[in-house]
Length: 248
Image (cartoon, rainbow, N blue to C red; front, side, top):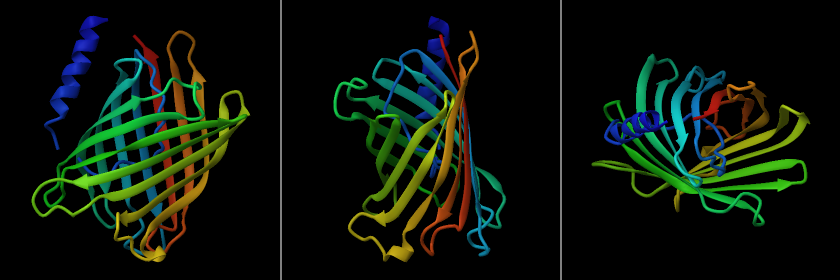
């Protein structure tokens, strides 16, 4: 138990000094489970009739751990391909989720997200992303909202903060499968949003679920199809997530 935890802690600390960029699309839950380890991979890929919007691809691989009952730490590596470009290792990031309220005790469950990204590509900038994570059960429905703010670091970095809103709402279909919808809105820099057509907006259906492996934890999965709602958004985006969770 202790050696494994020590190894994970060493990996997390080593990553803080590494090099990251924009994460694959996903909605973060504010709920933390102490002692739960996660191995996760996720991706998103775009399709569009415009050469500048089609063929973009992002893939992430991460290792996370519920360090305490209110703090989860995660180390993530990201690869990406820009439209008409080649695949590159893009970034390393150190993510933290802090659960601020006991689950189910108040009107909503609240957490806080903090991420440091260190980029690998010349011309990109390291950044810090932070913001509240809010979750609410409406009967059988589970709705999760992320309100995230990103600030670039270093010389010639973009001024101010970029705003990013993410929403997922799902209902159970079977015991291990839920379905619903997602929205990803990226309007731009606070105080200087462009016109609606210049903002990023994608929305569409999503399926989520888990498969319990008796004695070996469980597999969680998500698959979503997003459609662009503005001229600056890709017409179509396919995203997916596969996560193995276990306790030690």
